[in-house]
Image: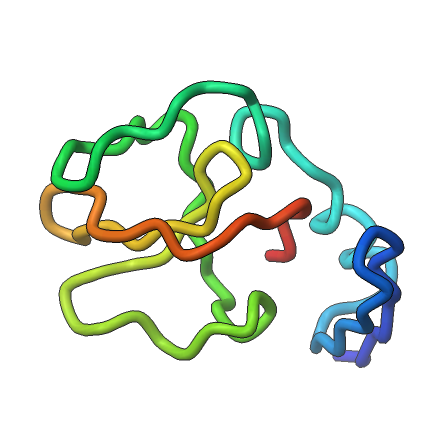
Length: 102
């Protein structure tokens, strides 16, 4: 497994990941339904749309630590969100992201 260092042009930030450069190019592309599809976010406490949610599998790539017990992180309409792992309820909206990184 190689290490890829790639620049994110919009933010001038560098991202260090354990993926290959080719894999980074694929995962760094935005998916319209996850990273900015234009749908309004549900209210806190409401369930998230599973089809529009990208579940984050590598939180470190987004500058996050592991999610608190019983919750997971995801990207929904260009926002990093935290949701309940058991029922999909939206718990918090953390910040915007322009790319899917995992």
